[in-house]
Length: 330
Image (tube, rainbow, N blue to C red; front, side, top):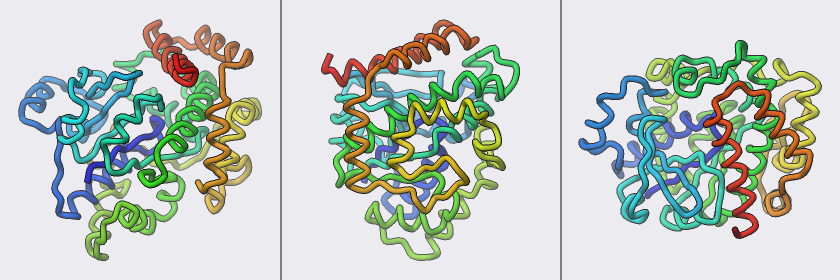
């Protein structure tokens, strides 16, 4: 079985990647990996700094309006010449790319798509912490002096990007291939959610195998393996967001948050869901969303205030523009 994992950055993707890797290993199927070939590993030997120890073994794929690229962090990005051959060489692919029509080509070639959903407000907080790691400051300098200042600049744009990403992937992937994992659920009850994920993937693993997966992917073990990438959040967005930021996110993505069961008060994961009616709402959000005058002002404001490089600002604007052009068939 080959799996495509997708999700907005800082949604708990590395944790889910580790769980899926462990499930593959426990299933006895073995793992195929393009990036793990000796030739590619030799190329990575000269790269000292990656975000995690597992990054050099992660088959990341970027989707860009009909073109596909394999990538290792910010170090290597090369176009894939044959998508079917590349997919056949990988048991487990990972993408952060927003949905566009060409993503359907990739989805058609895999057996399952595991999509990771996390509250965008917690994503923004997590990103504000990650932005001050040595790796991020070295490769993506932003010029901010504090996490609160960084959060103030990215809270609304994160909510906008999250809405497009989530509404696209959860509604455009065929139902029979899609498995949605809520970060909040797996954090609350990892053993139960790991067992559920195994079952949805079609693996019948015994209790001992499930325990091994659980212990191999605890936060303590993952921090030991990748101390610069794994952080256990002791607070939530409610401890960091101002009233103005809460209102801004509600105005931007409140419809999507509400459809999925995310609330504005104290956290309650019992309402998180993705059923037929939720998909209908999300499909309407995805198909009707466009670049409003308010969003144009918001993006201009972000571009002016953020102290990122011009290259970084251009990349963010290009991602948003790609979504809009694809919806219009351009």
